[in-house]
Length: 360
Image 1 (cartoon, rainbow, N blue to C red):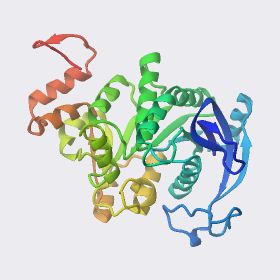
Image 2 (cartoon, rainbow, N blue to C red; image 1 turned 120 degrees about the vertical axis):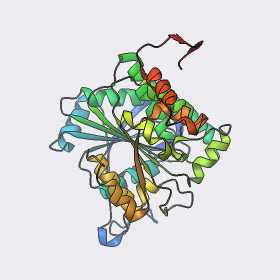
Image 3 (tube, rainbow, N blue to C red; image 1 turned 180 degrees about the vertical axis):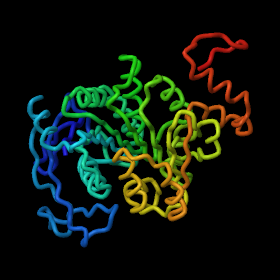
Image 4 (cartoon, rainbow, N blue to C red; image 1 turned 60 degrees about the horizontal axis):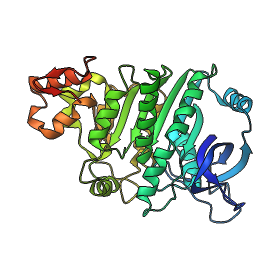
């Protein structure tokens, strides 16, 4: 994988980067070895127990190289691209060390079966559950770096399709980066076709604004949610009681919200591998396979019902911008008035006063 980071380099030879903030974007190429399938379970990261790991039983870093020039970046992309010239950018979430991010992304790439060129963006998380606010500020610190990475990928003639997969707090960072691109350049690059948010830790009201401000040329969004996500419940309490996108049941809003074509996959009925229920997208085999199809650019339509029957997942298409209306007055979700509000919010007539109010 190609790894871009805003972390500070480590003085410890056994650790590449710390959880502190660096003053530059550092680039490395990393090769990770994963044990044979017969020695592992889909969704699991088998951490090395010793300094010298056993590749038959544990994940292992085989090679770390420094990417020292733009030409080396181009060469890496040419060597690792598939026939469709697809790139997958992964943005990790809260409480992840550099090693956490590298091994988790390696597991995702392997278990989903994607052959897109894998690029990891890792921001300065300290990897400590008590550093939530520090991590949140670190995402703000890293917005422009992620913007640059996305834009550089889309400008490459060796890249035709960019999918972004973001988890937890990394979804906030991704939404902010895409919003900034849209506001500055008046559009999202056409090559950014799919954005997948897994358990997004984003204020539900803030995301409504982010989504509107992405403009008309939005990529397709797929959002994995669960009302049993304990990590997002804690985040909600820390954030003044406002619901998080990934912890909200969005299915009742499908009749009004479906117009924008954002896919929601509710994993509330799935028994996750972690006690907080926050990593189902990566550690639950059936969800990992579903994710693999989404990362391959396949539509989930027609397959979602079968998946739901098998593992208790419910899926719906929704258009996000009416979420504020739905949360404020669920009974109004299917009313004509709610539809008019949605239409007004998404129109190009911003700034117009209607009934004494300006849509926001």
